[in-house]
Image (cartoon, rainbow, N blue to C red; front, side, top):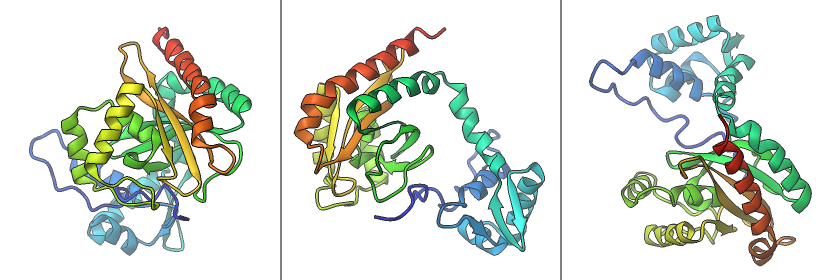
Length: 272
């Protein structure tokens, strides 16, 4: 599996038709769609390629690209458009607006130093988890992970921890609109089986996924909760199954992961 995680299936979907009412700014939505059309597979695009990937007319795509270029979010070189570094301001605004990430990082760094495995934090965004923090050790996946990377929630430990917090109707809707597909021979794709797993995760308060996302990868996750008890993020430890077995993770690493998540949750709950 060598595809970049930034190329999520939803990233380049055609523009959603205008919604009724006066609260939907179609031009703004189209601007975001143009930004999202760029990815690791399409870091540079011509005007025609942007129009094709977004479903816009060439004239519409041109106006948006020139506006973004004027604002410093896009640059153009020999008819090839690409995102400019200023685009990172949009993501940084989200990260800096919440206290969780500043609180979590040092705790995660201490955990990684202790367990010698990678640690990440993610939030749920529709059918996917989005990485908001990552402290790696060794490269354990064939695909590159970083802040902003996306993975399907149904076959990841952090995704299942967060899906387990949703009501049954919301889970049914997500799985119906985004049918599970096999990533490895071990991936659960049967909706009833996935929902049964979510019941177990909800009851025990943690989730272990063994080689469902990628062969050889095992991951263990727990929730991070705010002062109301709501799971606002998930935190995981991940490693290679040939050196860190699922049984070892559940027995030896789970208590340390739970302690770290509880520390972050406690600090978050006492944050003014």
